[in-house]
Image 1 (cartoon, rainbow, N blue to C red):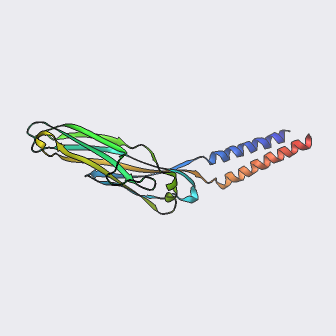
Image 2: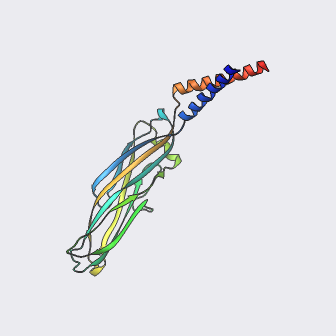
Image 3: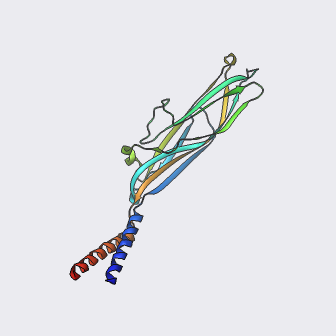
Length: 215
């Protein structure tokens, strides 16, 4: 009876280890853009595809985050003049399609203030974060392989008005933007785990047979 119980215990442990090995895993890649940006500044880049030999790719997510500092000047504004601008970010990758100048933007910065000719107005650093965005499931196959997949992003900036005397504003900014591509996948069980899984099943079977013989 004691030996039977030991076999059952061993089988339970083996099955538990097998279940643990099959839990989801994560691979993340990041690409950071640092510098001054302009309207329709591009970001993103090429990322490695998911190696299918590692397991089954379940989901693909993309997110981008960073900060911008804006400096606004108005050479013709002798007195404080209201200004305003907005910045949106979007990108294109398998499962994340967009058309240039289309909506919606995943992140939108809106800022207003007062500026005159003698004192530039500095806003920021202003942080932004798109959060995690899931690719369409039908596009997951495009991320599987041994090559690369492209993420092509752009920012759309509207910063061209000061209301006083219709004077134009000039806007410059410093940008830090990190694009992160994440693969969530179920790994292939390691050989040792498969062996233990087999031992567990064998142990359960042996214990069951022994119980039938003694019954």
